[in-house]
Amino acid sequence: MRLTFIDYEEDEEEEERECFTCKNVLFIGFPKSGKTSIITRLAKNEFTLYYTPTRSIQIFQSKGFTFYEIPYTYEFHHKFFIQANIVCIVDQVDDEWWRKFLKMIDPKIPIEVLWLTQKSKADRHRLFTIDCLENTGFESLRRALTSL
Image 1 (cartoon, rainbow, N blue to C red):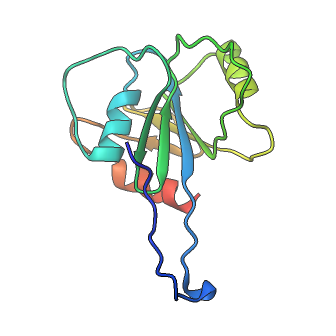
Image 2 (cartoon, helix red, strand yellow; image 1 turned 135 degrees about the horizontal axis):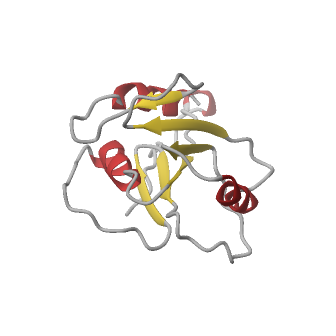
Image 3 (cartoon, helix red, strand yellow; image 1 turned 90 degrees about the vertical axis):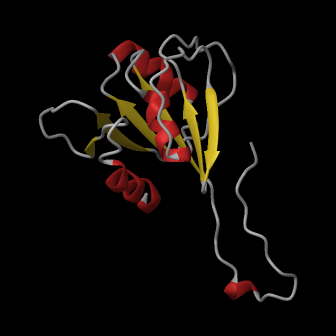
């Protein structure tokens, strides 16, 4: 996949150039929680009923975002950091997995955490209720991702 970019003309002044940055958005959660469906809906506005388990980190790029899907079965044995701007927790993760995950995130970059659910839950700060099949709740999620 190609990274979205803005093409500038050579004679354009510096002040007129738009500032373009690509945000890294990580999706984490238990298996079968809908991480792939959410990313596919955000990136391509598509949905499928077929389920294929994610085996390793998947990367999707779309409209100024790089979406990383990190499967719950992922082993954190690498020595590099992922630069995360936003972390979306789909339903939940357990404490031990969260601690391992945080060791993988570049500590120099502040992260925003969003909670995504397809079920009714008690009010939680930055909780977005979404449904991939019905395509509901995605407009508010897109606005939040863009504003962070």
